[in-house]
Image (cartoon, rainbow, N blue to C red; front, side, top):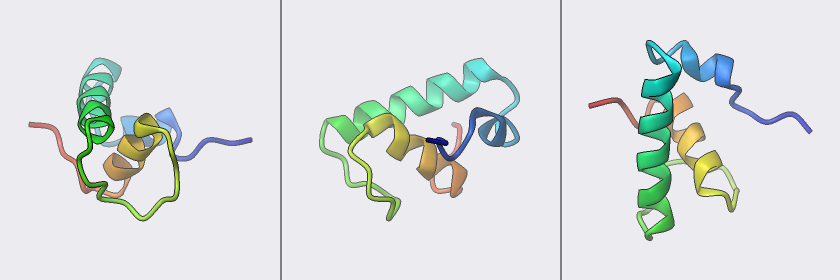
Amino acid sequence: MIIKPTVTDLLEIFDNRFELVIVTSKRARQIAAGSTTLTKVNEKSPVTLAANEIAEGKVVKC
């Protein structure tokens, strides 16, 4: 099974892996706490949902 988006795809949006991990984990915690998802991807994992939101440009670094 291939996971989309890949880390390589996401690193095109961020300058480094550390920044990617921080933004993804922060958004995943928000989703796990009940925040409305911004993507239409049907997935249960908050981390995967967060990664998809980032890939779609719906979550940006602050």
